[in-house]
Length: 617
Image (cartoon, helix red, strand yellow):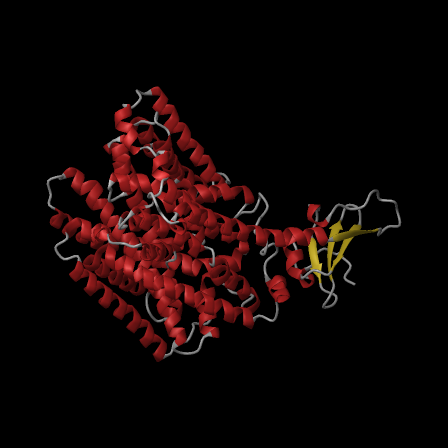
């Protein structure tokens, strides 16, 4: 792929926007938190309101790896990656109802602090160490690598080391002075621009393709189907449960996400912010994933799917606006990186330094936190180029989280809801379960000793975590009830303030969000289901011999190779070849090609037909 040409105007807008936003927000919040100590730097003085929290939740997840990766995943894998976008809406409901009330009642800075209050210091340190490890090996390098790959293509003469270093320094210096307040405020601005830019790109991409039928013909077989077969290597339908488990870690316990809610002014601000973020995730189907599918028409032979978004921006936008979209992409990457570095600093300072030196004053803690950011920044820069050793960034991120994080989810769930869980069980779940996950990941993903789809591995590791926590807890003394009760979820945590007006009741808002989410999933899934019912199969006797009963329905055929032919504008035909019987099944319908591509997962165009028995009429 030739390098994309960047005009002087585009570069000026890109550099000017990034520098201006960082200088303006960084200077303002550096002045605001001066003298506030640890609470001002790490939790923004508990001043965060719900719109800012929701927008910050959204953009922290939509960093370079997601903002670039989602359109690329849509191009490469199709609609099924939307499971990673609608699932957070339900998970954030669980966070608002069950996790957040307990966390805020405990007045914690970090998620591991809850584990200390519930189980003791050892589980806290084990989880904090795991979070630091994943932040430096997964989260921060992922954001840096995604942004560096795009900038490297746009600026081919610049070394990848330079782009990585510049991005890391910009993010590190910014949060070193501004703290959480600067991160969250800047996140809110970037979230609005991401949404606006995604809408513009999606609309222009839709206009650029000839028709929806053209999209269906160009997309990979089954790409428009939300539900994939159980054998699918990327998103098997039973693996949706694995998405739920890994997502619960990310949205309910991951420090760099939940830290925004921990800085909420009130519990309602935290709840409303989480629900707002869940709502913002749903349009990603239309503004990020579908443009990737549209790109299969515009760029049918794209070597690097992660270049879909910048190519759409360069081809569809005029000079100036193109630079603005590049600025949005760069800002999204920096916002995510800033959130990761800030949360890593919080973990190191509050979970290791403060526990070792509880008498240290808050001003010095804040200074140590700023210094830790610079150290973590250097570590991330050094590790980031190593990601190029792996096949794709997206699969690297998803696979390693699927193996490492399920035992953490098991510990938190049992800690919140099971009184009998004790410190020994929690420590076993973390200190044994997580290393087992690392060992399994190395065995499967690096050494290829055996095959295991990573979402199935997530379910397996979650089961291992449950068994470890429950088994060890039952074999060791039960914790004292007086020590456990304050840290369990209770029904009163779900209550709202007396006299609260109905439209401010987060429970009704959560129910509405769940209904909207499930309706959207059912709408897309139902489109394919209705299409399948409309298909009719007619058997053709190729040998003039009685070959038995009629062929099964099209969606039930499992042998041989499917092919989709287009004799004219109105009629589409799908042929299924039975080589062993010399028999072909012909399907005729008035449905668009997208339906057949969805119903018949192995559908392909006639010009790629390799089966000699297929007769093209």
